Image (cartoon, rainbow, N blue to C red; front, side):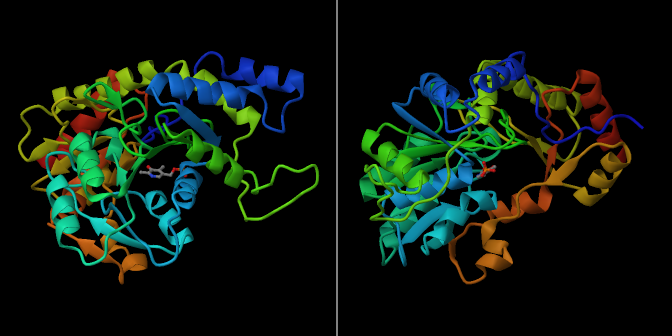
Length: 368
Ligand SMILES: *Cc1c(COP(=O)(O)O)cnc(C)c1O
């Protein structure tokens, strides 16, 4: 049996171990340490944001964002329905109400039209929108940022999957009031687990840092006026992050190359369409995603499984999750259709063109 091909396996660069060794030599295993600062610096420089905070996950970064923006009990928070649960959990942590907005076929992300319509007609103004750039591909983000501004609601970009993606040459995560990145094991870069909160607003990031470190007041003894969390990233993991940031452009190029191989090998095959890319944007193609018109994708998953290749259906929309059976949603059928027809194909940056060819011929065999 060939080695298992994963959807998105980690790929280390050349310096991760070297930097970890430096951490060990300095004994700054904890607390924090210089690599945390370096990691934040590198994300700031790369994305062009003014402030960054390294934390334990993107989920905790989103939680900090909502807490800092004062979102609390009973507030409405809009969110993508076509996303991963980690995008939504923080809304529940704050006892706020998620309201799910559907996608459009042009981007597979939130439909600006639907969003605007909701905001024009809703009885109760939401406090914020958490928007996901799904599979690393840009939402119609400039338009959506303008709509949020016009209606006076905060925009938080869940860029957990989209580090390196740009719209009009501007990085995802920097259009809204705050943005988050994930360095979880399956993302385009990984620190094994980790996240980053970014914003141009210095006060917000300082406040987030305060909450992320148990909300300790500035005293020599432990003084607490508010409660916080234990959400910061360790210096050991930040060392991995610094080395991973050195190869981000390479990883984006490879992910895009893998997608292009899929397109090349499946070119002209009936009933297959690929996830689109918005004009003026360059996505990172974190996972290559494909729709199948004429076949039950379970057959394809099974065929790939027999070749030791991972594949997975597209995200089941949040409004279809039992957890959210009582939540409000604003729908147009797009995310349900994507879920019904779509698969994520293996997109690990360690893959070769031969791997992709093998996967495509396995798929084609199921289509005859
Ligand atoms: C991975 C992911 C998250 C959560 O990231 P963690 O770092 O694992 O907490 C949130 N939103 C989306 C869209 C994701 O893909």
